[in-house]
Length: 256
Image (tube, rainbow, N blue to C red; front, side, top):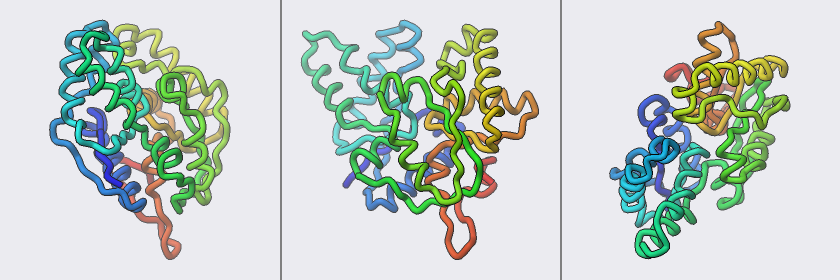
């Protein structure tokens, strides 16, 4: 099975280890990986800010970049959801681009979605002994409608004690440009999210969107908290062989 990676801006610029973990996980699942060089920003910041024409330019670039892909997989529920928005950006009279956009939307998956729903795999043989909780990001559950895949995968991670996050459906306050335009409100929202994380007693917060994780980690760091924030790809790629934990150790501050 051939998989084209949609790495996303945040992974490329700030979290390359997440892209690496995603690649290694998919390769272990016998996927043939390719990286279309023409990919850019998905256009979500412009789209959410009301700049439709600018967003359409980005959409056309991405549609062409992934046109030959069999499957498109990304480590971001938010960016996957943006691809699902593409068809609505083109008028019904613009038949060519609308059909191309629909084609891309139909073959795009967030990482956990792809592993569980397409590959039919739930146990990746991962091991991560820690008490953790999971942040259900807004785009993942509300726009993609994905509420089960991450939990199915995490339930098979050896040594991982996953505890429920109170008010887990609440937004972390990121929302892309929202956190910039409405900073005081965003700050209160992320503070509330961190308070609920602390209530769980978890040492690790796991998520499937680097945007949310960046926002939460930034606030945790400023508050001097000790909770570790990691992407689910890092957990799924954490292997135990011969009693020794491998992968991701001390890499850009990732994991342990």
